[in-house]
Length: 107
Image (cartoon, rainbow, N blue to C red; front, side, top):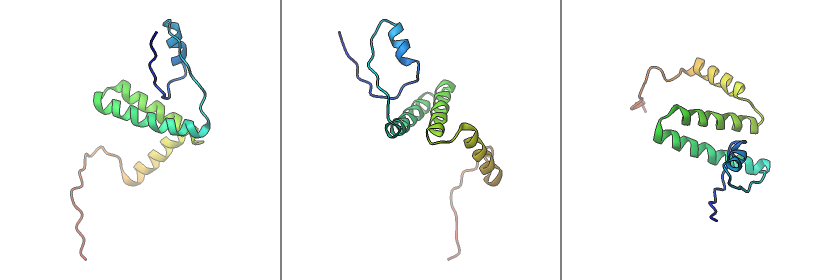
């Protein structure tokens, strides 16, 4: 018998998927504070996975974590999207591919 330690936030159905495969798993429920900390870790993990693979599946995982972070902080993905739209209307998006190389001031 071997044990692999993970100590990471996983999707809700992962324990049942593990057990359906004939393995056992040990899980616990996080406090609000622990949950936010683990969500931040998961955000970094999913971003790193996307940056390595550039796959849309990893990008969707990142979006799922962003949705969970918004909810855990008392917001919603819809509110985040509204903020994004407002900011894009005021400051633009990234469609023009502009690289700012310098700002020169007259001091």
